[in-house]
Image (cartoon, rainbow, N blue to C red; front, side, top):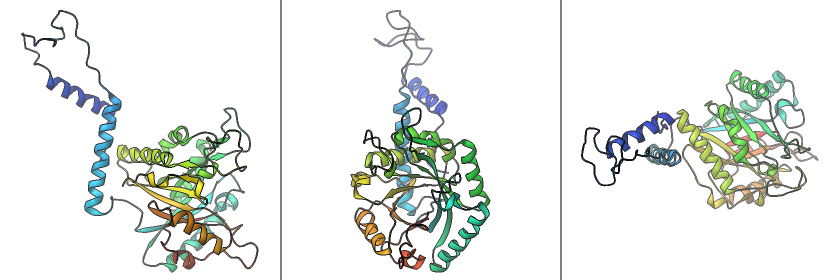
Length: 343
């Protein structure tokens, strides 16, 4: 494919070759002043080995890959394998080990998937011009009501749970989002824990500012709404872009939940990368008028790239006559959301 990073040993080997080409041939017998010959300095002392700045080399290769991705994007309008905007992603959200976090996990597996198939059929019928990409969205690092041993107020699913939800996704031809609620930890600390899973082309990522509290000492999850800055989103984009390049993957989709202005600061500083498709996702519940207003104020008025919209089975339809918005109502929003999530 394209823009693949060299393996570390190849990067170092290439650098050594460049260094060797820049030095004198091994058979040279007359030293240039101050330069070593055959491993011996001009003053007779042993020559010091060349210092290779591996971090700088990796940064140069990453920049090369980014420029190449930009070039392909400009020529074709899309990187191969990109999901958006060709398809609309429709996801069931929750945690397969919890009945209280969403439809994913609330109902028995097969019953849940029967419901999901009906929802997918509704979306296909509502917009025949655009394909539907089914997705599961599993909260994988979850904010907790207790601090835990390290005081970070979050807990990661076991490897067995993650592998199980991956198997669910593959059985039903879904992509999978691993969602991160960092609590009093940070994305910089938590995301590397998921890297081995993100090497799978069907696995994507979600980050939740509501439960990002590292800048709010002493605040427990659910006491206040958390926040992330553009620099946190940019870190996440760079993290995913590197995984895409190193593993020759199609672009990753990144969902960023949002239902207040303060949940994302400095949105204008968020940097786009063709290897990562950013969805700013309207995550609020309520009656249709309130949801439309939230979408306008926090997603449309502060645009980044693509948009998403959440529908709540438990909260949106109460009290009557409120109702869960239909696919037709959501599609009619401007811009029309390309990521739809049911909780």
